[in-house]
Length: 465
Image 1: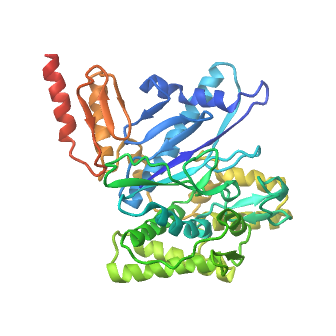
Image 2 (image 1 turned 90 degrees about the vertical axis):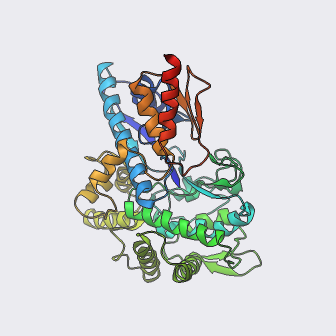
């Protein structure tokens, strides 16, 4: 498993012309370019740090097999990005710009742009991909009930394609930031069409055995416990499908319309039309998958130590939506954490959902600055639960997951830099640029034997002698 997070950049310049986001991004990535001779590099923890299309900062975690490793590697990305922001602000000040840089881990800006939180799962090549994608779609469309980040919809008429996909007309709170920016269900494009599931066959592994499931429909979560449920429930469903367990046909007649309808109904009770004419609500669909997961675990046992926590949180979240009482999940699920705080703030200050202040707070929730971001402040005072410790996140900033080939990438980077050797790499290749014949090609994502890296450098050292 792995996660790619795209960040939104904003600056405030009280006394001079504002720098465009791409200019700020270049300031941010100047230390990266100085370190790696590129704005697209792999770093010590095995992850990828880069400026993506449109010059927005992006971080892709190393490959992981364990949920806590995935969440830790992802949290390390926030810490790395925050450090780059601090360095950028100092460099900007040195150049006479007095602005303040804000980096947001969210999914949309005020101009209608959307940026993603893309999940990657390595799946067996023998799994029929189209069938798998169609089986996953009802789950992905309704998963926002358990893992949405929540959003204040101040002006519903400003949402993209609102004429084709009408939503509630009054200002309100919705489950998902990302849902209104989905244009297709399944597609090979990840930007123009913006589908929920991207079918581009790019496995970064042995293509005869595996392919990559690229899911781009998820919200950018701030909560570690929400992430645990998001990835844990998806992992369980993929295991059920790969095990060949038959699933009921819940194929949606209009997935794009459905995902938008689900987001704007906090009761989870909007009827969704299935292929064949019958209807089910989002809550009913999620309850079906929860029951499938419970049955699967009863027969096959738990495959990691977080299963109990995941299943409890999944069940409590659906019960909270059913009863409209979120008190059992309002420290663990992003949208519920946000909803609780915003409701209290609105009541105290006599505000409603169209208030500009709530929109500002919505943005602040996703500010990654540990001293300023609203979510981080809530977490610091115990209003948001955790999976990790600060020590685990700090360790993940420099160290790779121990169960994947990221361990080799870490070893290669440290060895090359210690010897002053120029190198390049991607997810499967590690190459010494002045010794092109000495290139490691590691297709096995589970390879952890670092001796093959040491042997390569020993071979190069002996050739140089």
